[in-house]
Length: 603
Ligand code: ADP
Image 1 (cartoon, rainbow, N blue to C red):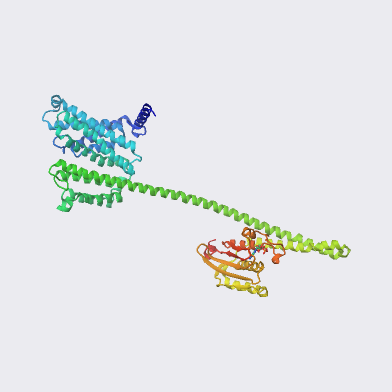
Image 2: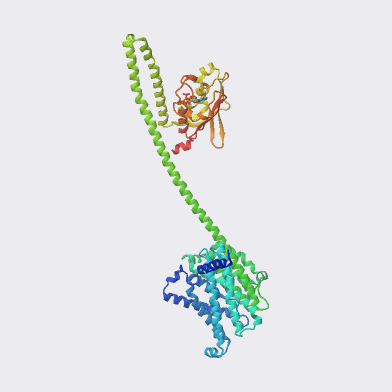
């Protein structure tokens, strides 16, 4: 890139960023919409406040230099302009001009007009000093407005840093213009330039640091803020602040420890900030600094030195550091509170979402339950109604065979003979379907079920077969008592045990029935065998109704509904059923029954 292009780009950047700076009344400034009369009144107020504060400050000026380490007007002007806008600058200018003119007037012993005609430079100096003071407020307000990312000074740490920067930089304008004017117009020897400049600067910096936040806060304060100050504990805190400050700076009680250690006030002020918030802290700082100035000019307190100016500068340094620390503390506290508030808000949104989702889920569950019920009802009605005509067909067929059997050819009789087994199979299927739909439709008859006792009964009914086929039943531990439907859980165990010895081709068959405790599922019951096993790809299929993995007559036959019914029973109890199996080695069917007594009564 050529030098010219680069220079042009830089120029464009600088000019755009300059036009971004709100040099004069801001577009978003509410003050713009104020009436002319109100603007005038506010300017007059600004002027009077500036004048009075300046006159008070000038009482403490350094060797007739018009520079004073105590300069409240800088804070008043900055606070007011930040709140009400740049249109208060005339008030600042006139207030500063009059205060300086008055200072020249009170120092001389002639009349005002005589002073102006004999020493016109007093007017010139006052005008220039006034302009410098106005420039300071203007620059500080621009810096604050431009860089602030939140409304109030200590709403966040970044704001505090920019505010401190504005308070440190802007007074340089006033100090430089003021002291240069005084030196140029022979009101001050050049040898004092540096001392007077630093006195001026420190006074303006600390004045702005203390008063601007206080004024801005007063104007932005919520309506209830002042009333909240009338509480008993607040009055106690203020008394404590006044008491300790008076011990430090006014020599109350004459405790040397206090009169020599100003920093003792810091923890107290920090506590006030954290416990009682901004308003009380800013008021406390104001009280501390007012009493501290009063004490220091009366030669009491930790900052007293051979000359008063040095003492006041040291005091201002202390107050400045204290207020910056407090503002930073407030900003961090505020940011933390904000983060918590955001977190709470997010939590609320999240909870709301969870609630909505739960509601949706409840709706879908209800829909699912309804459609399941409809399906069960349909299966029940269909199977019930199908049984009737089937019986008719069987009857008609037996009549046909009885009446015309001997007239039929062998081939026809043979063919007709194949119909009854099919009818019985169909009947079997219909009965199974009917049973399955009944399990789904009927409510569970819940009660305490002693599983150990129930298992004994089941095994007793199967004893003949188990002994005949020499099946070893293993029961590692006794089963617990659960809250369940006795008949249904009995059917569940019976189905699983029957399958366990049905699907087993080993010479030494065994079945293990037990219960384990897991952290996730609680009580888990199982029926294990050393049978033929099930390929993993069929784990889902075996729970589908009428699905068998073998030919119709293999392994003693079956309808393929047993596992489906088991699943239904377990799910009706709020549990789940699953299996682990290795082909050729055996299978384990696990299930849980989660319906507790309490949960059931809640239903
Ligand atoms: P059925 O026994 O009437 O065929 P089930 O629903 O009880 O119907 O079982 C479905 C299928 O699951 C069976 O056909 C069988 O293939 C398989 N099965 C069930 N239990 C076992 C088991 N313990 N070992 C091996 N296979 C099993």
